[in-house]
Image (cartoon, rainbow, N blue to C red; front, side, top):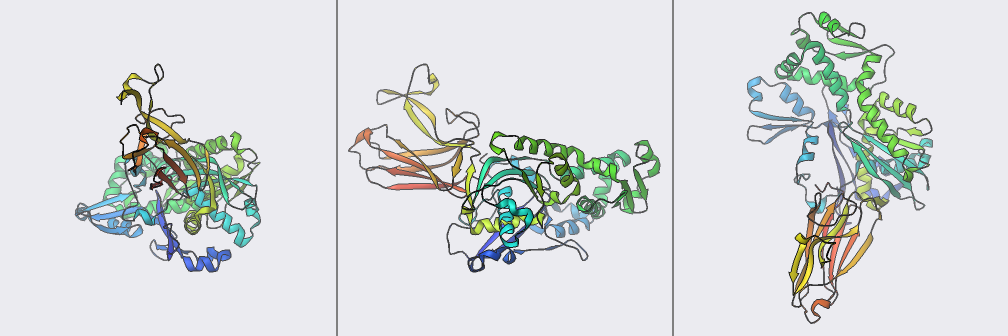
Length: 506
């Protein structure tokens, strides 16, 4: 999003989602001049999905040509690819809902943007910031929960994943994370999968797949119709979903197939629509919502989250009446808040965070962080495989020296500091390798799950002190980065390296 410099012109937030993506931005000068009404100055791009309908986000769909060069993104990519002949499609690469595939790839970055110009913001944190500003600007009664001392759970329900975080408003009105962000792949696309499974059970998977390949444009339109119905208020009896005639024409005796699947009373096919009774339509949601409820329950009963009586729901899937009602029914003692424009809460909150990252005052550490060291070898404590003879003394190599541990509460700009010594008299530098792991009490840097995430070399040109010279390693936790600094106590010279701790480290 932004650099740490204060002379930038604009903050741009990019929400790269599983199902939909979008961006929003605002200018620094307007933020400084009119902080109390800043939401009004955030500009959101609206996308044309066809006809007169404008959407606040566009599908996470990418179309490349045969040379793997960019052609289109979003609705334009879907429409262009859907209108191609089968021969034309062979000369293109079409990627849809591909975000979740990137989780298994190492070293993935928001490509093409300088590391110096980007800041990572956790989605539920962004949503909490949005709600905080919404309460300030609109004085919404439902958002009085954003007063000092109040705790609340944010559920960011997206297309692919659900992310949750527990926050508390401090006396200075900054936000503190009191329970580490959690979540899982329980988003709205899994409701789509249930609908698709019903079609495959009734019509057959080969027919559906053949239809998808031959009539891609119609296939896309069918699922756009289903997506719209997911978000609309449920009717009393039946939900009507568009079914292309090109699909029905490829099926013999659809009513007989429907009856064979036991769907005669709950699903009716008529012209270019399928009428699904409300009870059957709700079944598409049950599996994924059950998982969400279990996770919410687990967070609310934690010792650290006692007295939390407010749930704030944001994200595109939170627009679903089904999800909203289940959360309200399952947690009757909590006030459930769905703020206006809940689908844009993350985007707008991320813009606000870019202007004022210090609004998040403290976070629960997701990983354990430290440096690799050599320590004096202790028999029956350290493994023989780690023993190394240095200057006639036995050392234990690859020791993980912890600076901050997983699940620790760390305040913004909080520092840790430890002193180390060179192991050679004539040593003119010390190299610190920085490691992260999701283990609570790591022992060695090559243990399973430990990852090197950065390094720095501290010059120590004055060797007169021999091995009694001190070198200090400091970890400073900023808004979204760890700054690791090494200081030679003799010369007072220092070097540092900045690491993003909100990014996945492995």
